[in-house]
Length: 386
Image (cartoon, rainbow, N blue to C red; front, side, top):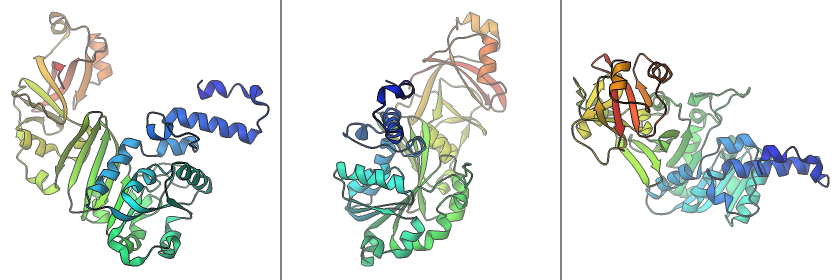
């Protein structure tokens, strides 16, 4: 039963107090909303769920496991995890699997109560601290009875809140809570390994200017939708990762490699059209895609590429061109096009305007692709093959 339907049946549960009733609805809603996002938790009996906003804002299991994989790549098992912004505890739960000791820090008392219960029933030996990140750092190492002589084995993780005091969204790292810039000296004093989760809307270049360049950046997409951007103390490499059911697509580079890459420009449409996945686009690897895969970029401001060869392992979508250019309704009729998904990149008409103009139904396999090639708007009919 959906939680909306259950909420209308209060009279059936007169034995519950109003507080118990609200808690029950919260648990039903939380399980329903996060069943696919957090499948491991859905299998644990008596797992508790927080309010809707916390469920919506938390990491998915897939992205949390990716962050755990980052830690595994650091080498031998680390000693201590300190999650300074515990929240629902999703990241703490999965990151702690790599650690001998883990600390969950959260200023919200109710979230701490839920986390304490969940960690206990899941047999996770995670220490819960109901305090702010700043206060925990001020008391460190006493706050967790952690010896300061293990600096190199401590991993600090943060997911700064991206809302202001009025609930409005913020995107600059200086406006997040806690302020990473302000507490950075304290973080550096206790750990050489720091992971910070940021919004997918983050301006990566601006953030690196604020934090310094000694960071690796992981742009993490889930099924071609960018979910989060992870900064990890490192060597100034960028990793564009698209998490898929069958494995991950990963494209790694440095900003200097992108700047110096030779980007070949197209003067015509070849047999295949390529679009890099959303993580690569967000990471800004526009020139390097052309150089590494020997592709021609359609236009400086059109992030589509073309070539006569089929690249089987291309990290993104691939179409085989059927006809181009499509100029009018007569071309549509001559080709017998009745169904087509519509994709526009740097094109004067929107997908809605093109659909209305050509009166075609949706399709999963065939596309009308509107784009500029060498500054000229062009419409292409193609079949998706990857």
